[in-house]
Length: 307
Image (cartoon, rainbow, N blue to C red; front, side, top):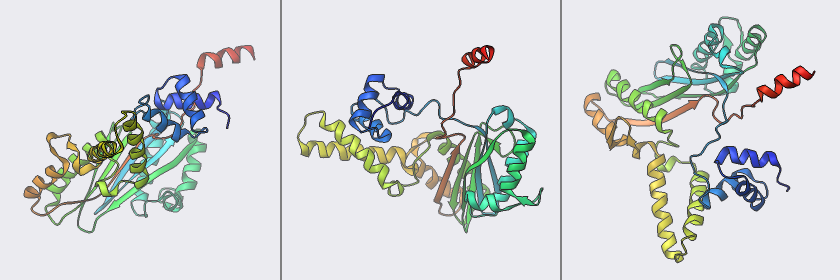
């Protein structure tokens, strides 16, 4: 497969590596973007947490709660100007309110009836596109519920009640005091917003993600020239650290870095008056993973002037 300039640019945007390194990485991996990222990481040229600075989309994250369940939805718009529009904000708030009574999937939410219009959510969004004059999409959603306990919520960069740029849900199972449970739940939700854990527990981390990390660690360790038995121990040690860093319960609690999240929850059980189990987490960051088209404004103006 031939390596194009566009592919090299995309890899540079995602990793921050140099042009020639990116070109070589793509050539070595037959143009596979994810494999090329891993190749660069293994060579120590790119960092694991480096994200593309240009993956963004406008719009809003909305959250709604009902009883022992809550939902977070992402509705994208083309510009931040529209995201500040009252009509758009009402739409996101309304879709979240509808979504909390569905199974939380985009298909179910899209098909659900939107009370204010009597139409489906999908048709209501289509009508809003015509009215507001900008493309919009219901992109993602997540719903969490518990039989006993609470689903705590947190909105970061809030622009209005229940609306912002980053939304988090934390489901806590417990028969204890709900007010106290909500308090610790909100703190954990703020922690999730800050650290973006991959899962609640190490055992819940996607095996494919873990295997990918392991392969990168193996390649990095081999560069040390040490024998295989030492490399194996090095990799196992690094994997243990990886699991500790990306699993919620083993992370250092942002509210008190001297204790883990698990320890903080255990301590909160005294106030709550019953055991607490973290049943699930959901975190939606606006525009995450969406490649936003960039335009050269000066070039556009020059082109228009020539036209």
